[in-house]
Amino acid sequence: MAVAEFALIAPLVGFLILGMFELGRGIVVKQIVCNAARKGGRTGILHQYGSSDIVNDAVNVMRDNGFDATKFDPSNNVGSVTITVTDPNGNTLSDALDAPPGSTVSVQVSIPVSSIFWVSTIFLTASSLDSDTVVMMKQ
Image (cartoon, rainbow, N blue to C red; front, side, top):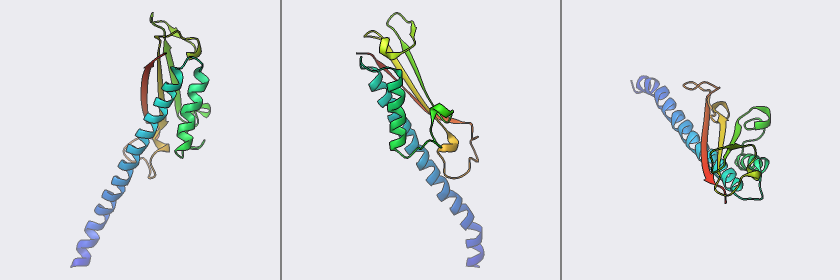
């Protein structure tokens, strides 16, 4: 009798444990993406750095946390780093390097869900993205 009960409950407990691992992994990756966006924003508000430096810093944070080129590579459309620079008058600028003090630098880092989870994407499509945006004012 106990074997039959175990056979009924074991798959449910297994799925529950697997779900806890996946949820935990999702939370960790959300924090990593947040840190990458924050580092890119901090670089972008300094007067000597441009948009390419922002992208490099964000990518480096992702690489330091185990996301190699197969899981996160904006140059090959696996994830993205989107930078928007707006001057104090509301005009959009092409590069953070040219922005005057008081401009806002917005950095959004996105990663596909297929790069995050260890188990197949049952509830989310592989094209779904996890992203975080940081907005800071240029010094």
